[in-house]
Image (tube, rainbow, N blue to C red):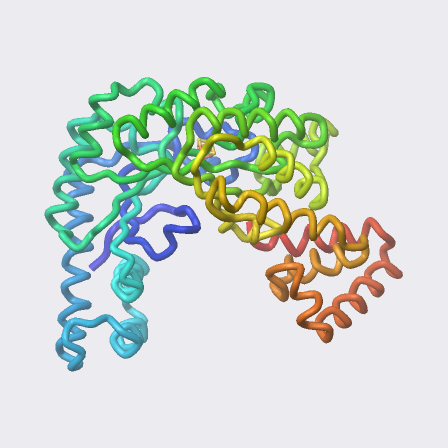
Length: 381
Ligand code: SF4
């Protein structure tokens, strides 16, 4: 028993049921994005998607039967999950259903990059079928492109809401037209705003992804200020930070090598986020920093009440001596630290990291240390 799943989902959907409604990305030209490069977009036939939903249902029922058989009364606990996951023949999609039941999130995420490109009637019918097949699902979310949403009629979005779609994740990335053009995002700031507002008007929750660092050294301030300005006009439910990295397989890497784009340092990105937060005004969004690429995970909270705390976390980091910031960056990127307060809590690890930095520096100089930090963070790409 198995069904098809796509390559990615947002970090906060890690424990969601993942069902693939379309394959890859219909745009696929963003300079910073490595995800679907070299893969062709396609719509999956509705019948195929319905079969996948039924296959996921059969797997879920088998998991629940196993729980009863083992005497756990339908609970998917450690014993049941452990018994199932020991089976080496279990397909990855079946494992993911078992994990979904184990975590009990009740959430379902529809893959891949732009499901709102599907005809409204077809998508609405699939959503209704999903909801009736899995009555235990409490939330259905999907990725979509702002440009696709911007050309949708409001009544179409309302129909999708009524059919069972709860939340849309949009890759806003930037509210600066100059940055969006340079990155070939294929959407303007005005379209981002229109899409976000329209979804909210249709009763959907909106989660906007922002990419600190995307303005490079040349456009960082415009990127920060204009992105905040666009979000102030949308007031999305969530603003999710995912700091830029530049893997070799992206078009942006070629621009980096050609000197057409300069990657800001960790500390420059921290300052950019400070300016960005300073310019968020009059909104009630929740800021989430749930991606491992972000240096400061405490920059998260509800606006407006947590803004001062988030800014204080940034100021505390910026007030550290340069060498302490470096030790924290190495520790954070290497998985030893989560917040700068770990520097005080864990002096033994601090000593080890200092020793490591001294070794790299004596061998490869100051640039070598920066290369080392880059390698550490790029392992997560
Ligand atoms: S629209 Fe999204 S998935 Fe498609 S190329 Fe751009 S960032 Fe990647």
